[in-house]
Image (cartoon, rainbow, N blue to C red; front, side):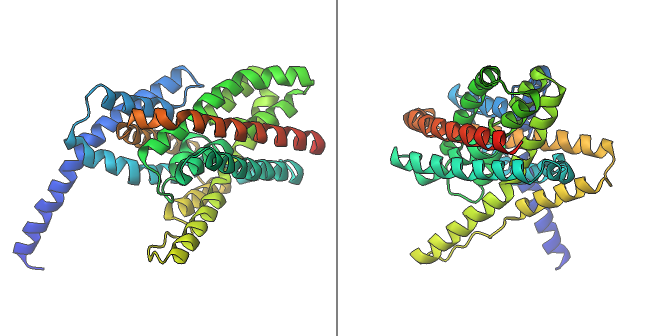
Length: 340
């Protein structure tokens, strides 16, 4: 490359980076707000707060075309990096200590609820992508799972927001319903904690319920919930394989990777955390960074939403999500009662 070529490339790269800056700054501010709200109110997911702020930005006429490059970058690359950092929250040795019985129950509950939610969604007329995202949010871990799954799917921003809204509403209702049902069923604190972790959607909601019940419930709930988060990797891989097969059958030459790089990174981060090599300070920084990056991505997705489209499919998506949640709660309670 000549000196002239270099002087042409560098300014061009600088211009591209400069175009990203306005959208990234706005997304960063929204992510910080979401993080602070979560700090003050632990049950409020920073991802949900951020996506609501994004929706409000557009609904109130604040969206501008010059924000688009940065927001698009946030909704893709920042989201994938955030998913990788999510793996730093997982300690695989804690999951193993659950035992084969509870682990098998959680896997069964995730699988059955995922299939049931997708099936009901399709019967109600939801698109394949929207039913897929709702099913993922119900079965795994709410907003972060929805966003990660959409990286291998073909859903629109409206589909993502609808799925996040569904799991947020259902998770909030679960915060009230599960402790009451636990008392009615005579569950001890550990069994209730296991059930909460196996059936409530957002990590923040799980922590809020477990903390309100007691230390034993909180510990059990968090470990089971993190195991569900870990199941995100094989679920995304399975859907990617399904999509590859469907495209091959239809003659579409595009082939999504069997295991996207950010899912590989997610698993690698979990393995690294499990080794115990990372100091507490690094883990704390990784946790905050992951939350902020995912929140910025959710803000970007929310800013691209058409509220009318969400409203049109919202009731059917909520119905499908409700069925999936009931299936998940029923299967896991029955299984945990038998195996613990």
